[in-house]
Length: 547
Image (cartoon, rainbow, N blue to C red):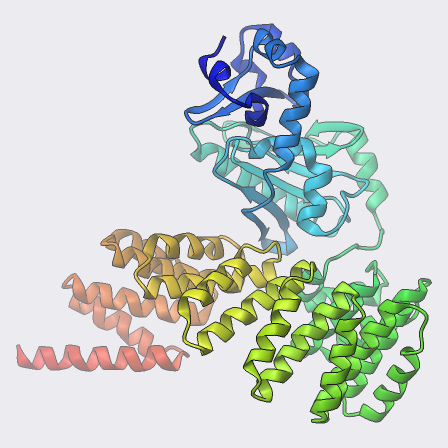
């Protein structure tokens, strides 16, 4: 019997399911108790011990109450792991997939709880068509819910390449392949031979893919805001599956990004919906758009009618939108009353939005303490994307108050939220604050999460990672970072990278190269970079004359 099993006070609390390749075992007895999860991979019962997982033998499972009891405790413990470390990765042609990474060998085992993991990550149930999944190592789970065909091929390609790279880098890899996970069927989709990938679609998977052809896209607000042109096309073809909260969130996001025309198209599509509540959201969106176009009287009249609705969600949102319209007219006291009315109705999403709007209003009127109280209400309201926004706004408030330590705590909270459009910028700011304060390892971790996110800040994050490498005495790694960005597609990041390469060349005595690189930086479109490069060139010129 395993010694630690005898000594453990509560061995059931240490039980975990461990995904392993069945070829690792010569003895068929533990394999017989390990349910198959993916082709070639089974879920073995193990003890989570400080020195590493210990796979239980048949006799050890009997000592703990039998295989059924062991399995039940192990799955319960696995469910408590949570999804910290989740990120949404994007690629070319709209590719997107989720990556869950933790420093635990049991993360891949969460594939067995995919029906719970997907809603926790996306806010939507696992689609009937299932998902693409990959488990390159025990510490990684990749998945792409199959909701429509528009980005299937691009996502399969991006996810397959990433899974293969993670598998190749690991000493304890599980599988480089991508699988189709469905409640009735599991199949291997990609395989590798001599480094070449082969894609196989069996007849069951093919039938499911064909059923997705032409289906409306159940997109998230993040999806619709990430690519406004694609959203315009989808709306024009009535290809977006709309719901009440989605219409309101995306309308506000499109307005904030200067896409009022697309927001109007969204409101029009919502107004045609067969769902009464979605039509109400379309009317609320129309009122918000009317106000943005200076038609405040018309907007307020429509909102007054909606305030008489029998649906408390509609009434609460009408009050919140009415507050926004009144605020645009500088009727601050009336706007505040409407926001507080929406907050008092205890409809979580409407209350959270109203609290964020109220906080912004109170900042404008000089009531910072009141703004913080409103933000705390949004932060604890139970709506993830609003809570994440509130955490970031609280970080900004702490910065204004000179409390950098508390600001970094709130930025960290925002960076850890399962809301990529908030988490990634928060991680970037957090990384910068940590770097400036010499907390370089923490800065590296925060910036790496941005650099690998596919976000528009990714290349800027790589430049900052280069600066971290310089500060830790690793100019070779810094050079790799700067060179990778200097030829990139982000002109501002490329300008900063070229500037840093010029500084490095100067420090290494390569004056001709330094002058060339600094000259390029001095001609960039970034005013700050131009000024710093020009100053450096003047100093080089003065040094040359002195010599």
